[in-house]
Amino acid sequence: MIISMKQHSSQEEIDAVCNRITDFGYRIHTVEGAERVVIAAIGVGDVTACLESLEAMPQVENAVRISAPYKFVSREFKREKTRIQVSSCEIGGDDFVVMAGPCSVESDKQIMASAHAVAEAGGKILRGGAFKPRTSPYDFQGMELEGLKLLKKAREATGLAVITEIMSDRDVEMVAEYADILQVGARNMQNFALLKRLGSAGRPVLLKRGLSSTIKELLMSAEYIVAHGNRDVMLCERGIRTFETVTRNTCDIVAVPVLQEMTHLPVILDPSHATGKRSLVPALCRAAVAIGADGLLMEIHPCPEKAVSDGAQSLHLPTFRQMMKELQPYVELWRESRAAAVAGESTKMTEAAVTV
Ligand code: PEP
Ligand code: MN
Image (cartoon, rainbow, N blue to C red):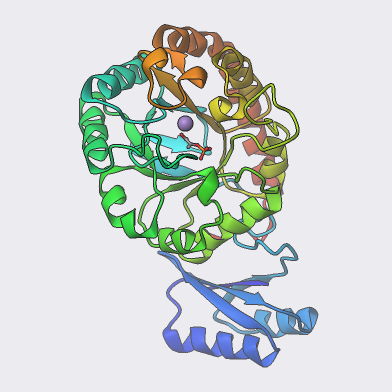
């Protein structure tokens, strides 16, 4: 169950509700939002009797039963999509958002050229890893703080927002100082210490699906971040590991509409890691738009042949420009269908919808 308290409830009122819930045998987990406190009741008990009892308490705004183990991120909890404001753009809203840039930040020249290409082609967010999770300990590990500083410089020069990967809970404060969005990589999807810490990072989080993770596991990881206080979470399908070897990973494209059904969080597709091959990226970008993703996270490079990581899947800048142009008619159709979906959603909005 999720119990939403009325706005500005006093601590005494909150305690009274918590006591009532524990009397019914449930454990509680409270999340304090800007406007109200929301309480998750977890465990087994007499749901119907507990709900009735809570609904009778005047300080309770509403109480709903949520059967899924991921509660705060489920569509049952919140019908309307979460919109995440990042600088001048909104993710999960009326615009299809393109985040692009190199796999790794390598140099001033490389990141500036990439940033200008993103801005000129209509992208809104610059990507670039300063901390790199590499399979081999002997591979380039990232420029770390120097890389973050270069991202900041590119941000100031172009007005783009910046997304970069966070690998450890110890680095959250430092990375949050430079980045607008914190990216949790596939290998860290179940780094629970990191997920918990991101609850209080004060920055939106893009959570990538683990290499061999199910959709439910992805949602449970997102739940960690939200349950620890940060509701600005977006999910990213980046391909999963299967028996197929022609592509680097297998893109679970249907995960996009599946997630759109199961959760209110924005869903992003990464066509670069999903394929590992630049020739396949434009087609997958079109597919992402057509299937209703909220945006793309993709790799580009001024000279992919010389990239220190993921060159084979990075688009050359002119190809990226061309791809963005060719994507436009699809994005127009996307806008029409998104507007229709939002109109339909608002008429269907249930009582479960609350602002945390
Ligand atoms: C990346 O975005 O460069 C990256 C390392 O991605 P993933 O975590 O999906 O492998
Ligand atoms: Mn990469």
